[in-house]
Image 1 (cartoon, one colour):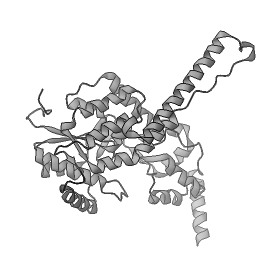
Image 2 (image 1 turned 90 degrees about the vertical axis):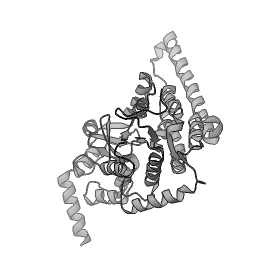
Image 3 (image 1 turned 135 degrees about the vertical axis):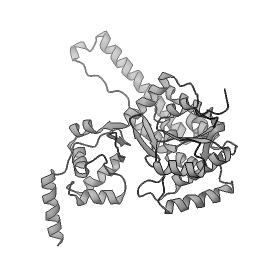
Image 4 (image 1 turned 180 degrees about the horizontal axis):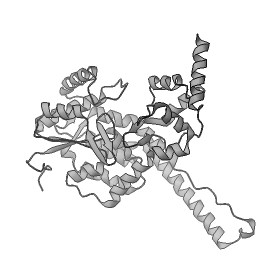
Length: 360
């Protein structure tokens, strides 16, 4: 096997960049099968682009990802049974299994606590990431590397111009910094580039197909080469298969299960939840711009959807991002916001008008 995967027409090597949100997903997988994708990724270390900025993003959010897993790890409830069957063998067996499950859950939570206390000794994901983030090759941008000043200046300049990758209302140059290092590595290695991320500022994903941002594609073609390809994947398993890594169906299923747990279909959500329905009807279209930005919260209040500012603030605690045109809403918390809505659209308009009158 050749050291790099080849494009179909020409022998062009490819480099790999895995974004922080993908690394953090290894804390959310349901079983050890998902962690095998981490092993496959580590096997591609000689093609993997990393920066100290990426390491910082991972470590900044790592504890929150572990805590999220701890919140979902709950022991089963005791199964109620009629008193006349209290001595039945089946009832005793059920109680025994519930007790055993409680013991296992307790041990798993203890392991998570140890991973928080001493990750270098008790966290296999952290250990693998440490090895990759601190590998010593020319695809690694460490803090002591003098090239960081050049990359940082370029990132700051593109940030001021509003160039992607950049999130709306973003105040950080982190994505721009990583992108500039990717371009630098692709130029130096005469290589194509594969990006794995679920951040919308890199491109759009509809169903399972990802499309790189048009501006990034053009920039890559102009700065690197028209003959080299820039590819975007939202699933790590798909990117690994592009690099001729053998990914099993179980590993793919584990990643698919993780994604399904973190996505909620718009239609189903609207049917079940008038609270979400109020948000969707107000903004219409595909996007629900309810995030942590004050601009969006102010917009929600101004449109008169919610009866109180506190209720508007609760939306931001539940939602991470927006929908994509495939009709999927992404949530940080698996819990759906409570079925509590503001006034209907006519009532909302009336409420907004009354509030305007009062202010005058």
